[in-house]
Length: 335
Image 1 (cartoon, helix red, strand yellow):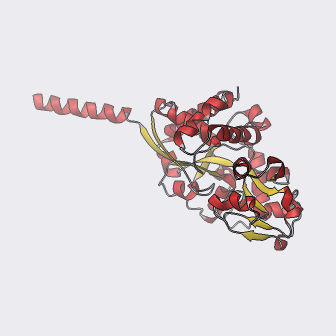
Image 2 (image 1 turned 90 degrees about the horizontal axis):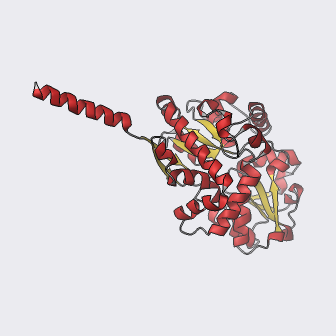
């Protein structure tokens, strides 16, 4: 009898332990820890994820396409990647139904960044020039659409595949005339490489014909199906991280410096403020809250992708973005 009671007690303790165990989430960021990652790192460092019953691990990435296969394969449960690249990935891999559940960059930071002294001030100026573009770059992934929207003769532009670490140094040295990149990264990095601010031209693709969204938080479909409450909890904590960052960027950026030994606080604060002002806190976000999308706009962006990309298994808009894990808009507002 005592043995039975002991076994029952152990079983009960084990069950309680399992019920109270944190859900583990490995998160793949799109890039190294820089200013725009402050909301995620703030939520991680200050225990917002832990308070939601989550055991979160966050890792850096190698570009805005990098997290898609990592999340689709289940190596990571969630991640940060470009939604336009996700659309193409889903078209090519209809059997890997990874979805976006949270919009980070309501206005994408995709840009062509050039130097005025090298004759790059407008899209057509790229003709006859050398464009440095890393193959995995989310901005370069929009090149064909940018060409069409601006009437550029693509055959007159020399594309040089460059690595991320040498992209801005090559432009600073005049080895290329312009580069593709995220505006807040390339602009800051060029200044760090000695290029005067008034010599830098930033051609934001959204200002030159592309009405696209930017980076999103992805979720692995199997994980979402088995752990819907954990996904909702992750997004609740992330939203609080964004709200705190928007309210006090100078404090939030300290979390970036804590995770990046070579980061300079003033540089990352400038980068963060650029991302907040240009990409995160838009009129659409002020009206509707953080994290969601306008489905009609997302549909138009998928149509625009079709202008330069031939779909084979075009996904439906709801196959790309699932808003069901987001809290109500009142909880997502920018204060």
